[in-house]
Length: 352
Image (cartoon, rainbow, N blue to C red; front, top):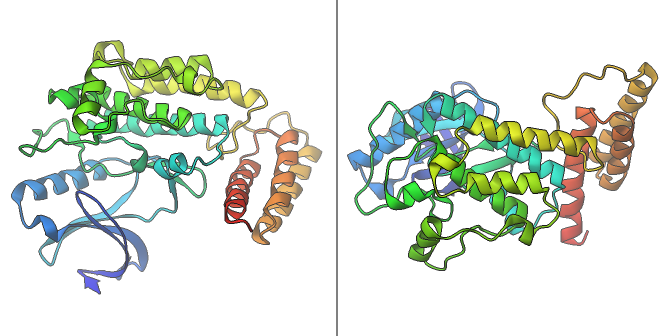
């Protein structure tokens, strides 16, 4: 099926804003994620404005932790946006399947979320709908923030639909729940809710109805993080609870401040036995690592990749742990370890 210059390959999913397809750009030969405004919404001008604002918001952003937009426009009477096609799992999947993720890896993921949101805020974009399903961890271990469908560009007037709450209720800020003006601190609260659930596997606000959830967000404090998961560092728990403060003035003032505090904790974990297995994009240079050690690490990584390609994930894990014991800053070893660990867990869950 053709849509403008794109060939629709299959349907990937559907959300409030539209349908997402896997499609091929006939002009460039590139496979993309093509988001098309759902025909179920008809041609309401307001919905078209919201979709256009989503495309504009993402189009202004260029950051490794934010989904990249290639093209946007209109075809066959429908607005569309072509984005990079990502492979991986979102935090909702990781949480619901209780995927085993080492603490240092979780903190690394949180730090990359901070980086992406901090960048968006610096460009005048407030996401407004941060939730686990909108945060993907790619197959290479990198965080990508998705779906700026509710993003408000600071220089534009907010568009709202009468009777419709913009945002996912479980992670809304009190400001959103009360329908008042929001700013980047609203995203900080929502991110705090995501951090809380990712670390404890429980939502901070557990009401059974929309109204009970909104009441809890506005009026009640969540259960302490350390009560649900005593293994979380106390400093990290304090960061999460500060992010979830009801009063915006008592939260962090900016996402960059959260990122700095989270980074300190991640650095401490990397120096301890809980080393991060997610590829370290800004890894330290291997200064001080002897040439013979670097050569040994290189050989171990090459052997580990061969084991991985052959489906021998346990052997790949063994080699990568040995490589990281020799050089804890090896991003290549960390990447293979991350991938092999996930594949081994998937095999075990299937009973292979």
